[in-house]
Length: 93
Image (cartoon, rainbow, N blue to C red; front, side, top):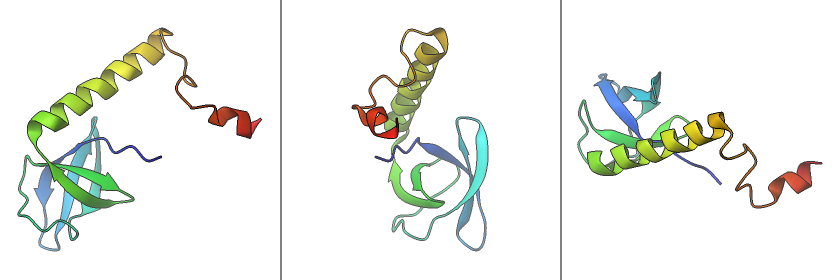
């Protein structure tokens, strides 16, 4: 399973690559697979360095909030890091 955390576009260059920020981490991604216009401040979902989908700011903000809550609960020990793994850790033992 692949989870994509919404990333905010910070800038777009002349080659249709963007500098994005994902939970404070900046990286470059390619925008060629998105048919609609993109601009600074838009949010995209990324897979292996390529933006796959534009999402609205409200959905992006809610997703980021949910991911931050999960991280906080893991850091506090409220949930363990392997909780919710659907039993997949059994295959790695």
